[in-house]
Image (cartoon, rainbow, N blue to C red; front, side, top):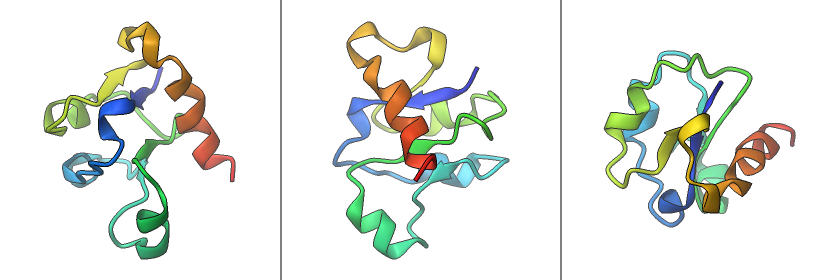
Length: 87
C-alpha cells in the first residue's frame, strides 16, 4: 500500500519529503525545473513507494497519508498520484 499526497500540498510543493525518500518516488523535484513549475503539487509513485512513512513526518502541511488513512474527501488523490506516473 503506497502513501498518497493529497490536497494540502496544492500550491505548497514543499520538497522536504523528497529529501527523505529512500527510493526517490516523489516527483516532480526542484531539479525537474519545467515539470516542477507546471505541476500544482507533488506526487508519490505507487509502484515505487515502499511504505516506509518517512515522508509523512517531513511534510510541513500534513498532506501525506498511508492510503488506508486517506480522508474520504480526498479519495480522488489516489488516482491523481498514480496518473502522474502514467504520463
